[in-house]
Amino acid sequence: MGKILTITIPSYNVEEFLNPLLKSFVSLHLENDLEILVVNDGSKDDTLKIAKEFAIQFPNLIRVIDKVNAGHGSTINVGILKATGQYFKLLDADDWLEAEALKKMISFLKKESVDMVVSPYLEFNDKTKRQSIVYPFKPNNLRESVDYAYGHGIYKVPPMHSIIYKTSILKENFLDIKVDENSFYVDVEYILYPIKFIKTIKYTCSPLYVYRINREGQSTSVDKFIKNKAQHKQVLVNINEHMSSMGMNNSIVCSRISEMIAAHFKIILLQKIRKSTYQELKNFKREIDWNFNYKIEDMNEPIQFLIKSHFLIFPVLHFLALWKAKLGEW
Image (cartoon, rainbow, N blue to C red; front, side, top):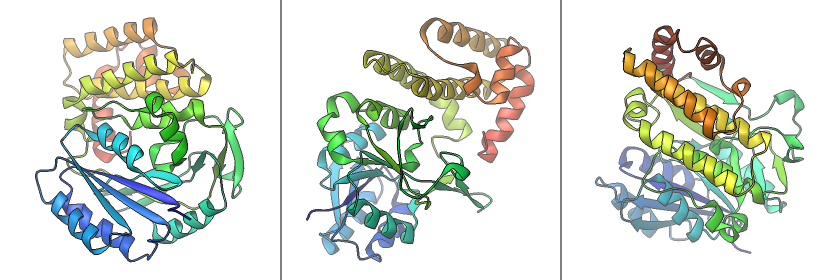
């Protein structure tokens, strides 16, 4: 029997995190069931060196794929193509997985043949050092190993941190689910594009993924949001066009696109209070009205208020967005 789970770690200049992360997998002694793919995206620090040292010591557990820099999406694509496990999970190098939950998950996957497994995850605030559980669905509606399907129990697209895919689904439909390269924020493509091919889903109740928020230098920091605003918008446009081309305009996809539209309004709000910012908000609203199927009800309340006020309250929401973004809460 081959590997049960491939964990792909997209890696670019992550020497600070990679050593302890790989050590955490080595200590579990799961080499018969687990494959760790470290996809080095042209790092300029010692990321590749660290990964290779682990791969030499633990060749049955860790493999290294070294490639020229082409962005986070390229590491996802390569990971899918190179994976040998029956199931596939993404793990950012500055995050980690709960050890006991991972053992439990592998035991669970050995018994399953579903297309996707969804679990809660933990958020770890790097500044406050506090940790909290995040449920993709309401906890009082959950039982261990419940069968779901999109539109029949799952009414929202789970975040990347919650998802494990059957690898064959990704490989067999690669041309339709391949994500954009040389861009940030392609995680949304990774969770949306396979929807068309997902027929069976099961939910497990143990939090597995630990997502680090509020770390200096993350692509979700205030400065990076503003710097990469054009990329965020382009990914939003690409997702809208791609899902439309696949005939996936259902309420679940609409809801997730609406959330991404709200996120882009927030990015605009983070900019300085200027007449040009006000005009950009109005222009973006016109653009989404013309080109997107969205629901304002699926956006967070501050953005709903912003739109309903015809953007007149944007100076107030600028400070709210700035404060919430720095706290990692909005």
